[in-house]
Length: 483
Image 1: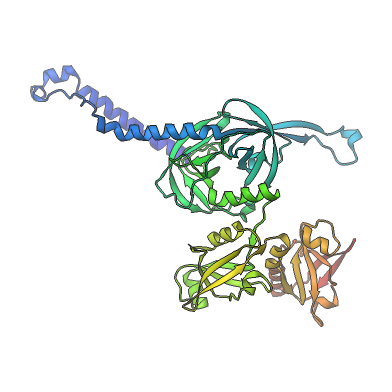
Image 2: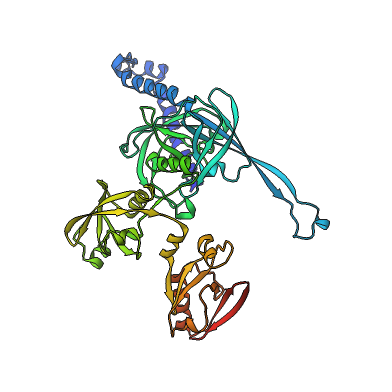
């Protein structure tokens, strides 16, 4: 595609050059002297520029200059150093292969000062794995920084430096900014610090599934302001010089700006910042319901009387939504007066609220409008695991994680399904015990009860036996299920 594009632009260029050459020849003074008709054509003279012709451009240029002067003291470069281990031989054979060697890898990103006492907001991928951080300010001074907290689920991080009296950026309203509004991006692309580029907001509410291994919280602002490697973590600001986004990613085939950049809006970033500064980690609200968008299919499935909003598909027992009296098929039209248009937006909003806070939900239930007050709990690995829990062959299963595995005496299991209950007389009750971990089934490590059910169903369809690898305490065993 790139080659075809180059060929096309080359052909167009040749055509344009040919036209220009022809034009020069046709309008050369010698030619005009030999053509009597041409003598009647007055020579073209450029019109003098009037003040009003360039006034608007000068006003915009002044606005860009003023914004740049205002925000640049709040922008920093972040230089990272990470020690990598290379040349490691098989464990236990160091005497033959030698001790592993180490080398230092360095990187450069950007950040924005958000508090005068030394707090800096940047991207998680800028500082992730760094052994040392060096922060460079607009005046050229440098100081070591430390990571206060990170949030891979939004690709944000907070860095602290021991310096007072810094110039923080003011926060703008990223919800209010519109497609077509001017914005400026500031950062250190390719290591060139304090670089300013201008563009417009090209789109809003972009979800690209690139954060948190595709399961993160995304609501990107899209801009055509040039963003390149090194801009990550730097600010995107409006013409008031207010922070509206944190520059994070680009869509490009070459690795350089192609006019499509993405920034995390401050509406998503500010709650993360506040939580990390206060707690050192991110605490998120938890509703206890799975969500879905309104489509022609869901309208028919639930016999909906609403055309806008977000559907409550399932509810977890004993969790906030169920305790507040919500029902499957309810359509959430607005939360705290803010209209809800899709499930990603509602998920982000709920997660941005602190645990313990209350939300007022405007709900359409079968065509009737009601208001529901929901008291949020905290989103934890344990409660999230319940979404992927399920019952298979009479065994209640939850995904293993550090929280759920510790409950059953295991140390930091990262995969597998833990048996939490057994139904009397079931297939599972005769072979499994509470606390068993199903590590593999038919050679696959199941991530959820639903995935296990699909594997068993496919084996049954083919009439094949299934072999399970079970961990029980410190022992592993094989179980063979006949279909």
